[in-house]
Length: 248
Image 1 (tube, helix red, strand yellow):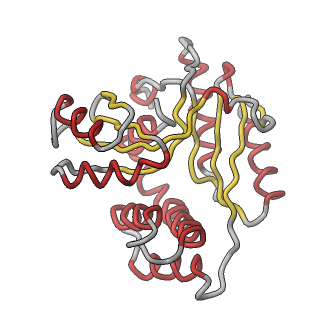
Image 2 (image 1 turned 90 degrees about the vertical axis):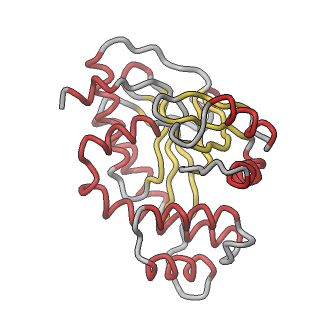
């Protein structure tokens, strides 16, 4: 499982949309700010910004919010000076966690993260403590309603992808970081509409947790971390079965 995108989709289907909308808007705006800051405010020449804007529009972020975030990131108006930071830790059952954040105050962010880990049976770790169990790569999601696996695989590999996986309701195309946007453009030019495009920490070494109580604790920790305003994304190296959510 690349990150916990599958887990997140399950979680949203269970009715968390309204509760997370405000925080989602904040995180989408911060991604636009950071993207514009790192590569400029023109989405035609800044592929990361283009993806961030597309994702914001898909999630109904108002146009004014998008334009304001671009202006902040470009330095056209005064705004927060966010920096990207990656933290590592372990959760219940030894599950590895990688947490991406956008923060303008490292001390506050690390304090909030440490509290979330400690309160929920985990521990914030040092740099490199679990990162060896993940691979930083590009990830593109394609609905099974769009194409079949053979067609997608041939097209994706021709466009520069490394692999294509069947993730149940969707296909996931894996690319090298540098090839993400070229591969996505190649798929769309071939008539294969993509749904979600971005960089991810994909687990390469999976934890084996058979105890549902432990998995529930892992989910509780993920929730606690994702509820923090500074957190962009949380990745874990364990599969969360839908049965865990069916009990809620």
